Length: 109
Image 1: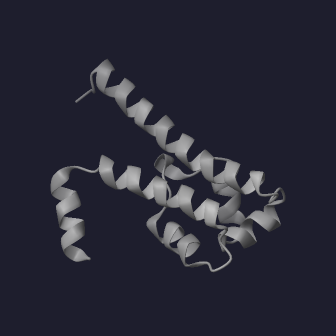
Image 2: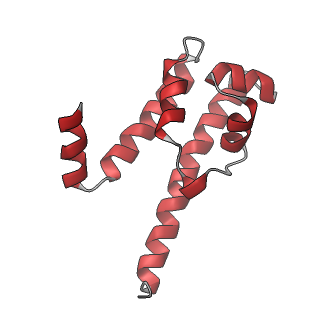
């Protein structure tokens, strides 16, 4: 079954919006002076390869893996402004979920 052009356009728009929000993480790091990959990886608490994937916007499906997000938020060296951007990313992602899935996730917590 082929998706309608309007459905494909909406899916593309959603993907670009998610990538834009992930780009905000990169922008926050750079604005704080974390310009090298090593500095960015340390600030995020991630491996260089994972950080490169985020910085270069090469993540699958235009979203971050929940484990990756958890590792970043668990890092004590994560700058506060970057933490805020990540939390905004999570809030937007959580709000974009279907209501039934949102309720199911809330019940798990």
